[in-house]
Length: 440
Image (spheres, rainbow, N blue to C red):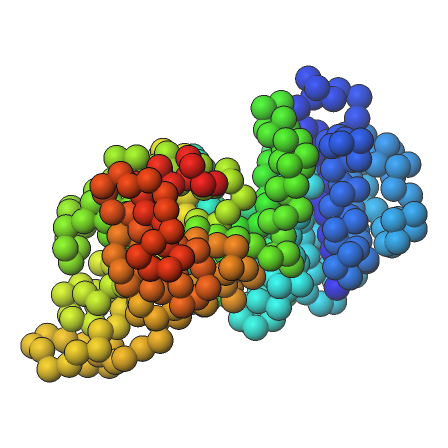
């Protein structure tokens, strides 16, 4: 599979730190960022690379050459005139005979691309977008998708967005079938020339090629917590360097075992009101955003594990539950916190009640105290359950955690000291924030 890396950006915002080298050659711990990314790709079997270059192209070509010193094959497409971030794809069209990776060198990434490609092949779409949560979804481009991951709407920063939304941000990494290039009427030979108004004809990847696929069922989200971060400002560059030094960048690659903090929802994240049926009754607990931000920065994934029998009982629709979870993600996002995943069980074992959804009235494997949701999350994110925590405010949360092989914490609201006790592996604490401050 070919990998095209867009490496032609000027890096204007970070030029105050590195004015004499192109952004892909900016060193992190004495190694250019693009070299780190190429090595990661090579180690995964992606060795057929095309770099599209423009700004200071000669320095990039001089450094990497044909790629042989890194064990890869590198071709270059030099944009003498800027063609937009997708113009080069049309110039390279004859070489693109099968799906290819399209990566943005403006981002620092370390991703298990074999997992992403497998997802792309399994879903049979034309495009797979790498999407992830971040700490500022309110000013990021958002992707709205259905339960199968098919993209329904693409919201740029300037687009109006719903009141509540899932924290799902496009990261600029893609698997693309070349048939996408035939979806728009663009003649390759016209790209880079002047139109009748004297403007250079360019092609915008997002607006002209990808966004129009929304709602077609041909573009899917690959949701992942792996490391992808823009380093385009001095502040962000400093953050990326810190992450490299701590090992965070490399460890987040899903080929490595992850560790997670699993959280019950009601009573831990939001105030307990019994069976929550009304979105207006959803209210975050006072210290939860601080606690989740600490989890986000700790190296642990933060994943919600919640029983929601209100679906089986016919007291709430799937859409209403999704909107509550969107509210949860939106409010956390405004505070700079995010969740890496949400798993819920809609089932309930007791039948025979008016209004119930009969097909959901089953004795399932996912309803806590059974460990099914934790096991599914572990499969999805390659989580080492023995290195992870299950935190909840009830006995069933603790029993589910123990059954999955996790360490557990009972949030009991009484401010107990940490101690092993009632449930074998269990610790107790007053709040999630107390736990993360003492134990992570």
